[in-house]
Image (cartoon, rainbow, N blue to C red):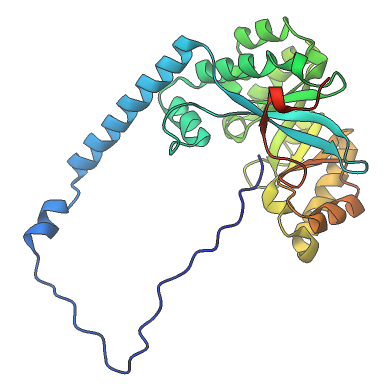
Length: 287
């Protein structure tokens, strides 16, 4: 995932007067009592939210399509594009982020269905992507192990597909995901482990998955040029990737200083706003 632009948040100014602040009014007003949120009210609100989420998610899976955009992944030595990460951009309420869509889907037991729709939409655009470039798609444990995914991969050139194992799969256990990966490798796909270095992924379990690509989390990348601890982490992950015979890929590169530091460490590939924002397939460079 790419790093979000930094936002400056102003805190409220402290009182500058020498006079002490007025004592708070501790009397409970009717307004205070009427706006108090009870456990029952919170439950009703949550149930209403989930009911709305189920409706829009079921509509999505019924429609069978979702808008997808693509962010470039580049060779850091040359800045040549070598692939694109596919990212869902759901229609409807713009205040609901893609992360919320997927979180709601997981809570409602609809994650596999939503991921399959997204992956199908992403891989349908392989013809719009330069022939030497791959498409990377995120996949959870439930989806990685399902037959529907293998059916989709059978319809495309799977050697141009990278499956990014997401952190929820790590939480469920790499023993299970390694079994699914063994089946998927037979299709020709490559496997990436996402968010490495974020604390969500056990480094020792990377050996079980035998990742082809290790993606260094943007929390490590951001400001690496001025942070010796982040530099040490990136260097260690690069060494681990080399030991595994995997490509090291840094996420969230936003400045030239970050790029130069990562290059000096020998990180092989990267993505981030510095190279380009996600765009629809029709706006990518031609094949």
